[in-house]
Amino acid sequence: MSIDDRSRPHLRRGVRLQWDKLRQKYLLLMPEGALVLNSTAAAVLELCDGKRTVKAIAAELSTCYRGENVENDVHNLLLRMSDRGLLMFD
Image (cartoon, rainbow, N blue to C red):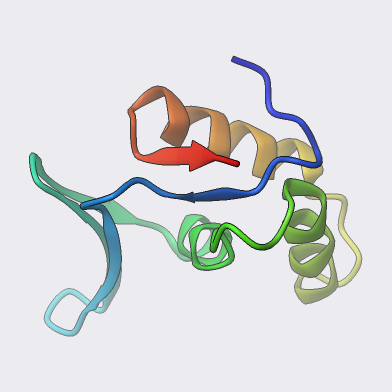
């Protein structure tokens, strides 16, 4: 699957992002289990609300990371999450 810059990603039904106080890390919770996320992956997934486009997510994160071009990283993460069935695109 390829990801279009105009697509609007959101977490699949039954999947949610949650801060784990004990581990001090974000978790992606799903019916099958949990996935421990690094801070960058959590930042991307927090912006996947079904309203922002992939391009807008990358632009917002680029600002947070001092203008770094993060488009490829965002695309790769979204593709991996989609391949695992955790993300949907409108």
